[in-house]
Image (cartoon, rainbow, N blue to C red; front, side, top):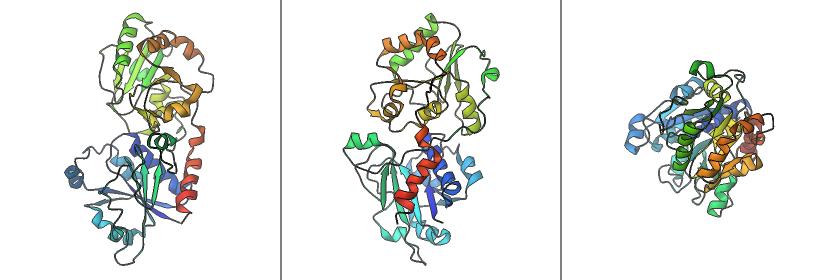
Length: 340
């Protein structure tokens, strides 16, 4: 059995924390290893200027032991106490002095002399190799940065049993309405022409189409546009997705993986998404299943024909079958945990 410390930089509702949580859970349930969570104390987080919110802290605390540290100088004692074999961080990917990966004394037990190996898992950049294992979340980063870094993708977890439940009745959305939804970072529904297309469609289009937007900046005030707060509750998120007929995705830069896109697709929801993004992993994975728009006219045409799109719901929209917990954790095991 391997003992792995998963480092959490901050406890927001975003995909990074969801990804770490899934890795830590399935590290135990599939690989039979032991997971603990390591994070900075709030005072250290504040001094670094990191997000102060701890919305997902209770979720981690309910499932794992959380060890809070003042600085990485504390790691030798943590390595001794928990007999750590590996330290894992999911981070940007650029060169970082914070982790002090080049200082062997930080990653060696103080009394036992045990060496804890380090894993740096890159989300946005793959041109600054650090740590014992330097891996990427997607192939698109290797393309963008002309690198050849091993890839371990995010886990796309299956449904948690709430498939038949939705939020429609609670929100006053008719069962026969068409609902386009999205969730993700509050600031990442950020393409201006998408906002304009939706506003115009609400004025001129059919009256049975709703937009259900979770954790999204308000860009239009309309009775058929409903804004929901973020959630870390997996059952509520599943109910939210099952309330929707399709996802409308509008992140200008695109996705280096796109967990929110994956969460809709794996539940057989078609995804409307911008075709011109620089970061294109979601486009590569969706392939021919993606409903692509290049500009406002394209999106307006798609929205005008949304009834036909919804009538095709019985086709296979799921492009994320290969990212199951078992498949991804076996990559971790073969590439890292059992490779030493």
